[in-house]
Every structure is written in structure tokens, then in C-alpha cells.
Image (tube, rainbow, N blue to C red):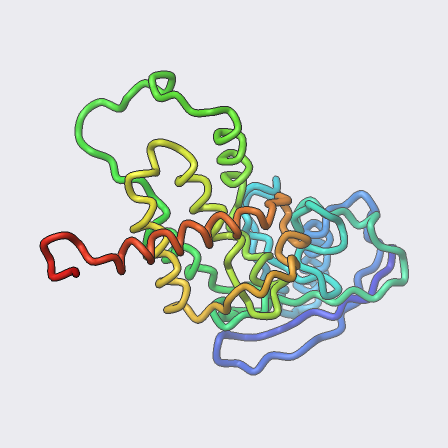
Length: 257
């Protein structure tokens, strides 16, 4: 396959950046998208040019690092697929392919196609955890969990934090990511004691990071490589309103009338 790539090149976070046209020739249709970029980089280096910087790790669709917007779609044209699992047989020889980084204020570009997604880490640190007390943990089988709740929690837990939901949203909202973390923990007995503090803290951190709000257009669900449902956003909204109301309710003996 012979392809024409239009790649976003940016030297550093302060550089303005621009699109650069690069020819990719002799690409196997069985190569993954990242393998294609590896081949292109080898040729660039042979010609004394700077290789394209892009993020990756596992190349198995489980780490969320391969954050690329391909022809205007986060992770490319295939549904429920990460960039590293996208194969070149999804394209045609002679095609123009536009490759860009995530576009969001909270995900600043570091170099070329690499963005800083540490905002997600700070949101999760704010509340996406369960406190652990000293002593031996309880046996998992000793805590009864309804199968329906366990299944929904597992569906939410598959979120890999890639940020495709942010890249797809016109408001750069991380609500699908956040709702997956909130649902995963609030549905299970171990996460219920902190459910109110968790959702309030995570939403507050989201605002501090500069993300936008959800307007329920479901682009996030369509772009999610793990096919996480927007029903988790509805659940998170209920959790948030419940926690906010309880926080505003006057406590007995503290001046409430």
C-alpha cells in the first residue's frame, strides 16, 4: 500500500505546530497502524529527518496510550478499536490519512502526537479509590454482590483512560471516563462508604483541570474503544445530585431549622 500521511508536527508544548505531508510507501495491509508509523519513522531516520513522536506501550488495546485522531475520528474508523489494534486493511492504497493528537485544553500537546493526559490521573487520585484499613482483607466471597451490579461494575471497569471520550466531545468533557470510575466503585459494597465524597471530589477536580461539561450527544460512547455506555453518565449524575443534596442538608444540632 502507498499512502499519503498528513501528520501534526509540533516540536514542544510552546511551538505553534503544523501539518506535515509524509509519503508512506510499501505498507503491508496486515500491519497495525502503529507498525505503519514505525516503518515511516525508520525511513525518516534513514533520510536524516526527525521521527514522528507518538505514544504507545502495550500495543494490545489495554493501556490507553495510543491516543491518535485518525481522519477526524479518535482511534480511527473501526468501532470499539484502539489505534494500536487498527490495521491498515481498513484503508485503501492511495488514500490520504490525517493524523492528529487529542485536541483539548486539559490535554496539552507535548510533542507531535503525544499529549499530557495526567489530568486523568489527578481526577482519579481525587476520588477514584477505596480507602484500605489495616488488617487482613475480607474474602471476596464473604461479601454478597448482586450479579446485575457486578456485571455493571465490570462493564465500567474496562475503561482504559485513553481519553477518546474527551477527544470526541465538542466540549472536551471527560464525563464518560469519570462516570466509569464512579460506577465501578459505587456499585460495589467496598466503594459505597465513600461514594458521596468520591463523586464530589472528582467533579471538582474535573473543573479545576479545565474540562468541559457533558451535553448528552453521545459522541463519547461512539468513540470509546471499550464500548462503555453513556448510562454510566446518568448514574454519575444521580450520584452527584444525591451527594450535593446531602452535603447541603443542615445537620442536626448544627443550626438547622
